[in-house]
Image (cartoon, rainbow, N blue to C red; front, side, top):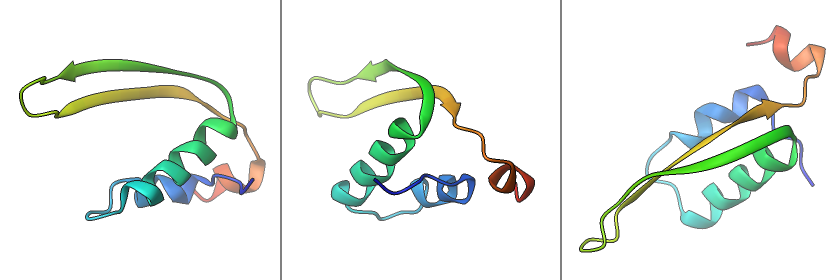
Length: 68
């Protein structure tokens, strides 16, 4: 599985992005985390709009953190 890098966080906020691309990046992020959790912040049953918050710790590699 590809490594999620610190620089990849900016990719998650680019718009428009396909759901498939976002799914792949978020999967990489979770896979490369030492721990993670998700919280459903809101959901609108009428429109289907939702907000999910991910929290976690990305595995640390010195070269990745130095570039941040």
